[in-house]
Image (cartoon, rainbow, N blue to C red; front, side, top):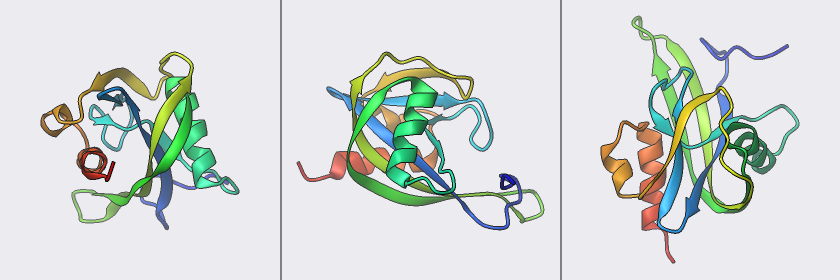
Length: 144
């Protein structure tokens, strides 16, 4: 039986990737709640029995059509949304990896309405999720 995303009994694990190309990072505009209409990293929910790294690669392939190479863990963050009565409506633990594209052309599935390559500093001022901004800042602050 699939776990409920709304009003869950336990947090769900999400895996995503900050994909860079030159001086740009790929973001998608979400079509679904939570965070509908906001820019975010491509990614999705980890399936039972699936390794988090494999989920990140699978979700990126499904959502934006790219094959990626994971280069390391960037951050692990909570994404908790409450309803008007203070109850937890959504709770995700988001695992975000740094990745480079290894092939394919960006092609969106129905989970996102558009994509764009942004400079990392642009992400600070766009309508992106708070966690996306945190992960991009982590990318900017990483040792090189």
